[in-house]
Length: 405
Image (tube, rainbow, N blue to C red; front, side, top):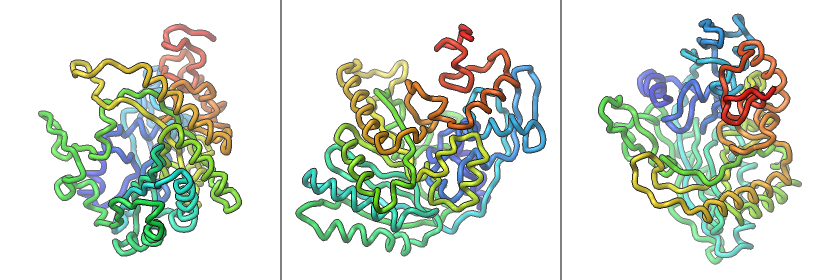
């Protein structure tokens, strides 16, 4: 998992490798699905960083694929979906020079009325376009139905002073309207990048894996604790194109975000859109199988909800509240629909998406799908490898056991 690579490459080696934000994400799976994290606007995707892979294909052959050997299969592994083209047993990834610092900005702004919240969303969109729409900033912000803006963003390459100075104008704007907004625990700072995943030096931010036999460096972020064992009621995602940040379209974007937030919390995952990244980063993403829409999107919107008592066998948990679950699922659909009005056919991220997406081929891979189908047929003609909504899965029943075509 990525914590193993961060430990070896960054904490011990002083370099950077593009991986997942959550440290427990699997390495090979992330590469095959695309692979974003908080720093993707500077370092691109994990798929674009793949230099070579060892894979066992359906005919039992062990292949080493790269730009020279089986380049079509190599391309398919860069974002074409995990578990679809074979069993990946080894990957070789590009590493990068490590920035001096990684940083963060945090806080909550609670608006005291719907009108104030709508104004807050509009102000944040303008602030983002003017100040944060660049390779330095990623991670996410949340717009909640209770009229709260939650800031949880991460940066790279900025000093502590630069990080704080970046956010001070926005915090000052909020403080200037005390009758409209309450600003809770705002802050911004940066730390030495090499210590970012060092759980000994940043133990307050991690939960250690204390199971017998677990490597000492295995841990996950405390901020991810609520996702551990979650039983999802619903989930959807879509990319928002950077054209929505143009000044004459910002109000439409703000209105859509406000309307969506009336139904369910809306999360903007800033690092999962590559608009604002350096030209070479966007070009590298276009040379992967990932939906090309990602190169022109400034964010991935994720809308999801579920029950957080761990849904594991043997764990006591209350009975599922079906009425609440169905309401949440419906509200997620309504929120996503508000954003699709301004961003139709914008695509969705295969690894974080609606399980019931009817247009998954176009949503996940866009114009690349026909090529991926051809590669699937070449290396797995009989469909040995099947995953839900994976390339070629329309030829099979939903459980993958009965061939339809």
